[in-house]
Image (cartoon, rainbow, N blue to C red; front, side):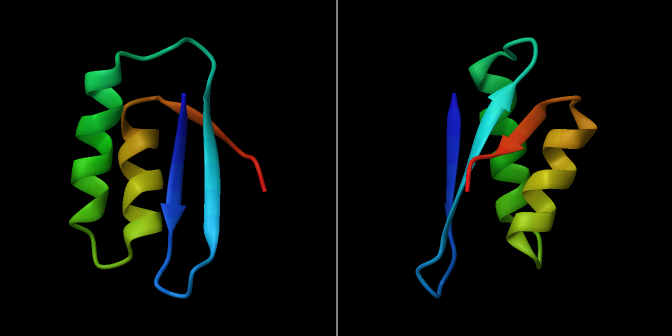
Length: 59
């Protein structure tokens, strides 16, 4: 599963969900939580980390 983060400046960051494949609903929950953060990328990474969802940066 991949998550694409597109910042306001048009830069894209692709994250691969790695390790044990978490339930898609758990990933969506983390993304919804992260979007509400002041710094969206940090919020998403924190929410994924809190749920022990491992990611690798593609680019």
